[in-house]
Image 1 (cartoon, helix red, strand yellow):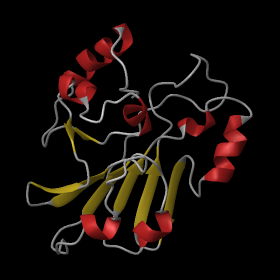
Image 2 (image 1 turned 90 degrees about the vertical axis):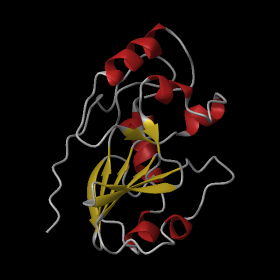
Image 3 (image 1 turned 30 degrees about the horizontal axis):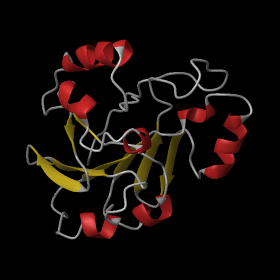
Length: 178
């Protein structure tokens, strides 16, 4: 979701996202468009009742840890090692990182699953081919070492309201830790 401006579309999305009710809450991370639009405080997300995890880790129901990272545009973004500096070995770790970068680095940590977006799966031809060259995983799923990476093309567009590559999607992933 592009949360860098306030307009009818963002207000409608806020309203829809407020209705999402989950057992553990609704969480997110901010990305590059919030950075560009000066929305570092995540006004859109607050209005949508989504708790931001910016370079933080929380324990969810003594079952797993959920971590979130600032987008790489933020100067003060912590390294994955800094975020995980406490010992989180007692439960699995799920990481949200707006961009699917540093996959090799993350795969060398205790992170079990990472969710990302940002790429829009290219959105426009021929940008989709460029995006596939820029990212090790620009869309879909990939396992590196013991970390499972998922990249969604997301719900909304950037730039012109046209999509000739990649589809809008909500990714549903069933995770079982054994």
